[in-house]
Every structure is written in structure tokens, then in C-alpha cells.
Image (cartoon, rainbow, N blue to C red):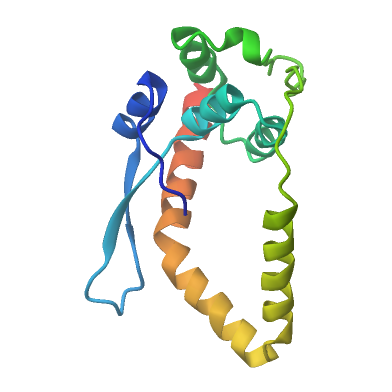
Length: 159
């Protein structure tokens, strides 16, 4: 999960159009309601930031058939991001062409991630399974919302 500060009109629109999802297991009395950004807004924000992960997101979302390409194009046009990523879905071309910006040194972040992976690797198998089950329970509402959105996109693309 990631918090998104509203820093520009694109962020404000993304938050306004976000889908509300109830999170937590059925057994928990205090379930939280969170806002989940649409795939199109996530992608537009990633393209605006200009990191290589933006290109990766395009591929992942396209493969999962999570994108409404017309909505994405309108969003990019509306926020002046069309030049940042040339996106096409007509003949299966799902790539983006973007310039490669300079990046800061992130070796400390990578080292912390590696330490975290070692800690997880040291856990017992039963503890890892318990963590996995906890994650499944917490993510069930998100999964349900994802499936609902996928079904909606499938019906709109068929018509």
C-alpha cells in the first residue's frame, strides 16, 4: 500500500476517481475503507514521474487486460502527458517510448530490501504460510474489486 499526496491536478483527479474498497478480514470488527486508484491514473502518474517502472506498468496492466485504452489516452491528453509516452493497443503494440532520465543512488534502499528478504527467508515454513493467509484475507476485498473491474472492462470492450 502506498500513500499518495495530492501535488498536482492529475493526483487530485486520480484521488477523486479512486474506487473505495473495504479492507480487512471478515473476523475483524474494525475494517478500513481505502481508496484505490484506477489503472489508468496509476499509469499516467507513473509516466509523469518518468521512471522505468512506468514502462513496466504498461506491460503488466496490458497483459492483465486492466486498461481502458481510450480512457488512458484521454487522461494523458487532458494532463499534457501524451508526449511522455506513446501508447498503442490497436495491433498488440503495448510499449511506451520515453526518454531515460538520470536517477539518484538507491543502493541503501536495495540493501534494506535485501536485509528484509533475508529476515523473511529465516522464518519457518509454517510462519510463512500464516503470513500468506493473513495477506490473502486482507487483500480479498481488493481482489474482488479487481475482478469486478475486469468483468466490467470485458463487457464494455465486447459491446
